[in-house]
Length: 432
Image (cartoon, rainbow, N blue to C red):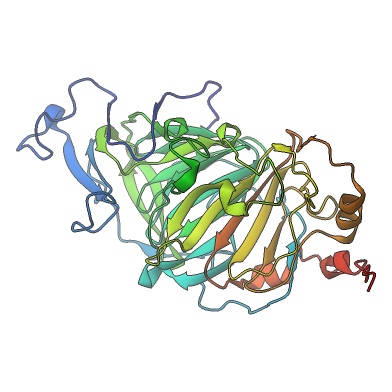
């Protein structure tokens, strides 16, 4: 699967009910399942919620395809690699930081083969919780697709562009953009060269835009900037296509003799989407003090408790700092939430050394954290003039109300054993 040199067409809007045809006249008129679909296609519904979920959260789509997705051999267990099912995680309350995760080029591997579970909580069997993964890839998925029965993937590329073919059409996602591919949707990932990024997988509710409250009707991530693919089918028969399924944290494989990307038309509101993080409209204090980092929330996956998220996706984008008589870097903090941070590019304002693109950190529930010694002492002496967080800087956070354990791989690989030392230069400066 070679990367296309041109971008694809998209439909704009978040949560919209779309309709799209690769061939005009292939969508049924006035009904979902006529006795005979136009062009003798098969009708297949993909449900993202229980049938009886309230209409305001209901997500489903109808797909009109050359052959239904049920036509495959039995799924059989395969080696799950470094994907784990969260039942055997390590408990570690310390501040944790990982150096950039290596993109191994010794053995060519694709997106699925390069999935590595780092941390998580809960379990997909009870539809509650999340997992955090790293992905690396050095080759494209050829005659191979992946679908996830466990949850939705929010994918954050850090190095290398992803050329993603889905049942709904194509998306190209580059560093500085994200995409969400929901539970059950089949897709294949194309890459060119060494590729790496982060994934937040949610097992319960789907991601939604955060409520804006007193901010008003505008700001943060605007709905019109989210893009979903248009129908684009391929009719391949007589091939050997491998279908990989993630189910309860394990991988399974089946084969079929046709392409799963044979959807000629579709309609509904359950479809993948992408978003350009440079379009995020940040808000901040223009007087004094900090607003909490929740003001930088792009997407949230709520729990049943109002205002409490299983996962928030938060970014720290380029922006102006103008507060007066204020310590401007992120404050020292003990949080009831768990915070996994990653860096897409540049340097993070609270830790300009040691926290590197392609690496990560985890500050768990009530584990103290904050700016390192050098950042603190520079900030209390800095001239408080308007300052721009540079355009080259882009950090993000997966924040969760759940307490995360870490995988065996994360415990043993790329750990920065000296992370704790970055705060040891903080002395007693008091005058009492």
